[in-house]
Structure formats: structure tokens, C-alpha cells
Image 1 (spheres, rainbow, N blue to C red):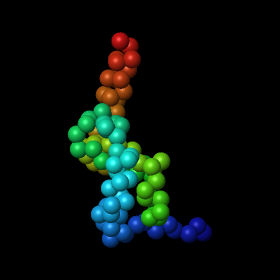
Image 2: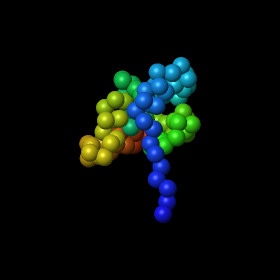
Image 3: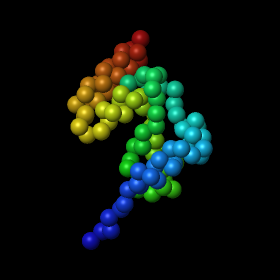
Image 4: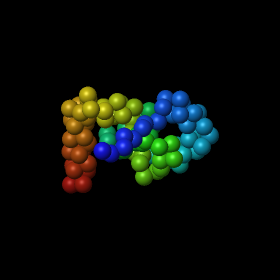
Length: 99
């Protein structure tokens, strides 16, 4: 039987989000547009993989810049709408490459 990993508590996350270290991490890792739809509005960092340990939370290889709307859509109950946005963005980028 494998040992179950424990996720970070909301108190641990709150302390991280309020820290100067987190603010510096965001400043260094936040891109200038959403990686999914290209928006430049309401940007934030999203962890690509679930983080179980506090030490791994500020690992730049685990984060991607997304807008607030796409961040909401990333989660499983919104997959269909996210797929439509990604298709539209791929089509837009493809047309741009053809010019």
C-alpha cells in the first residue's frame, strides 16, 4: 500500500500568499499574457501539478501564467468551455503563422 500524500492546508497557503517571498516569486514568474487565451487582463499563476509540500509551492517549473477566466475554466467541471477557448486560440495562432 502506498502512503497517501497530504495537501497543504488553507492556513499554510494563506501564509505563503501573504509573504514577501511569494510576492517576489510572482513578480519573477508572472508572464505578460495568459498562456491559454492570450489575454493581458487579470493575470495570475496557476500550478500545473498539484503541490503537496510547501517547499515545492514556489518552484517556477510548476507554474504557468493564466487569466482569471481561464484559471476558473482549468478545473474539471469547466473542461468543455476551456477546450473551446484553446481551439479558438490555436486557430488564431495558426492563421497568424500563415501570414
